[in-house]
Structure formats: C-alpha cells, structure tokens
Image 1: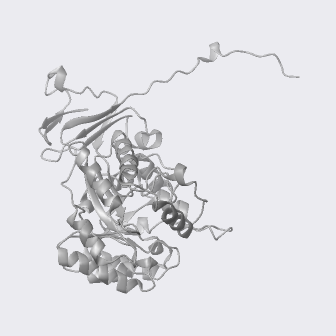
Image 2: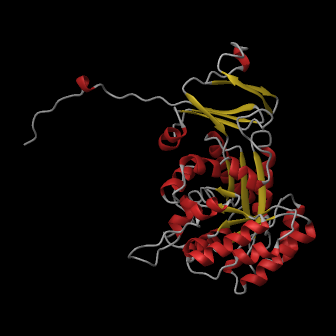
Image 3: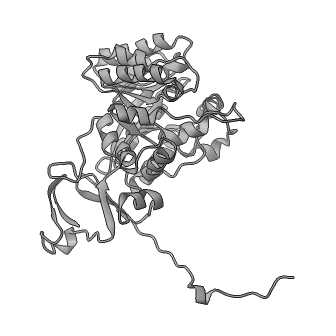
Length: 395
C-alpha cells in the first residue's frame, strides 16, 4: 500500500500508504482495491483499418485474403469515414488504459493516396492532450517514394512498409531505409510476416548498425519458425543493432497457419528467445475488427494474456511488453511507479498483476500526463443460491 503524489505530468513521490495524509478530495483518487500500473502503450496499431469488418464482411482467411479484401474496400473510403473509425478505436483503447499509440497508415492507391494520412493527422490533433499518437507510413513496393515523402511532410513521424511482400525484399527494404535516412527519421518495418518466407530481419539489423534514429521491426513471425542456431544468429544481429521487436499475437495467431490442418503452426515471433537475449521487446494489438482480425477487445491486458499463454512469458514480462517495453521501443519517456517518471498510469481493480491480467476488470482509472482522462465503473448482480428458482422435473 503506497501513496503517490503527482507533480504535473510526473510522479513526485511514492511513499508508504497514509504518509501524505487525506489530501484535497477534489484532486485525490482513492484507489483502495486497485492495482496501480504504468499505463499501456500500443506500439503497433492500424487505426485507419480498425472497425471496418462490418462494412467489408471479408472472408476469413490468411494474410493474402485480408490484403485483397482491404484493397477492394479502400477505393470507397473517405477521409471522414477513416477518421470516424480511427477516433472511435483510439478512444476505446484509451478507456482501457492505453495512453500512447503508434499507428501505421496506408498510402492508398488511386488519385488521393494520403486520405488515411489526413484522417489520422486530424484524429491526432483532436485527441492531443488525451493520448500520444505516432504515425508510420505503410506502402507497398509499388508505392512511389514521393508518397512516403508527402506523408512525412503532412505530419507522419516514421517510415514503414512490408518488404517481405515485395518480389525483391532486400531491395525494397533498402529503398525504405534510404527514404528515412534522407528525411532523418526512424523506421518501423513490417518484417517477415510469414511462417516460411525468406528472412529479412537480420538484413534490416545489419543495415541500421550505428543509426541514431529509432528502428523497430513488427511481426517477425518467421523468426519463430527458424531452427535454434539460425534463430540465435538473427537475434544476435538484432541485439547488436539495438532494433526493437514488436510482437502482434492476436493478429498473427489469426492470420497464420490456415493451410495446415494438422499440427497447425502458430504465428508468433520467438518471444521467449528475444526476451531472454535482452532484445528491446514490445507487443501490440495490431488489427482490431478488420479483414486482418475479426476480433479484439482494444485492451492491452488481452495482448498480455496472449503473450503468457502463447508466448510463454511470465505475467510480469508480458505486462512489461505492453507498457514500459512498448514505450521504450516507441522512444517515449519512461513511465514507471517511481519519482521522476512520467505520470502515465492505469489503476485496475485487483489484488495483484496475475489477477488483473486474468480477469481484466473494467473498473479502471486512466491518467495521461498526470491528468485523469478516462474512468470506467462496472456493476453486476448474481443471485444468492437460496434465492434461485426451482422448476418441476422436466418430462
């Protein structure tokens, strides 16, 4: 039991409970029965795609089918429609405790490739003060460099793409890195999102040795299917280059393995080996209710749970991946329950972290930069056994 004093956007003191006295009731949160945690951050989202499943009604299936369904729908999207879905998704994530989001945004085909960019820049401006939102370009190998550059000029923060989908993956990776280098920004690359593709994660790592701009790789599914020696060699390259790796368990578990009906392989990077090696590691929800994943609760506790049951992390390690680890990979100031740290906080009803991750109570307080930005309360009633109705025996 502790008292925590906030000084503006930072934690001023963490002292034994009762030390700070009763405090001003108008500026004090009484959190008896709650666990206070560093707030989650989501390092890999797709706000421009979120909540589109109902409109698209795509067939369930693998990554190729998801991409085809999304491209077929994207022609009709407007800036307003994208913004409305993205705003709703971001606010749901905030209500569940996520106070920082990194979202990839598609550079769309057609005469107006920046529709998604303009929508997400608008949403970022609208939600400023409630959460931090970083944006990353996402274009295919046919997307001209000029579209990436125009997106950066419009306010996008990082360069991204999916080189593993290109006919010449190393060449596409080199092209994206050069765009970022010329603009002096970091990269967050969709990497090896397949169970059996050629490996490019080590190519990325070796290419960015010495970079001062942030570098991260998302998905890295292929790493989880490599044999031990090859896996460890790639991880050594990643560690040497200080590349952050972002797992996306719910989406990759859904997208991968559709063509194997016996001993179906699961799509997940080498979570345990990466953490044990000391790689900067994070995890995100990725897609939520769109062609790439029909489900998702927009809750970092769901991602943490999947890291435990599918990735075999401890509960502490799993929550770190969606909070302090995610902020580290995103290049954000540290947020911990200690003096001087950013006051990015989530209070969830529960006695300990295992209970919190297991039950994911929706009784929550969310603080961003020291300000209460979301509050959720739940109510439930269960009949006492003595009051249960009895029925005659069915015949």
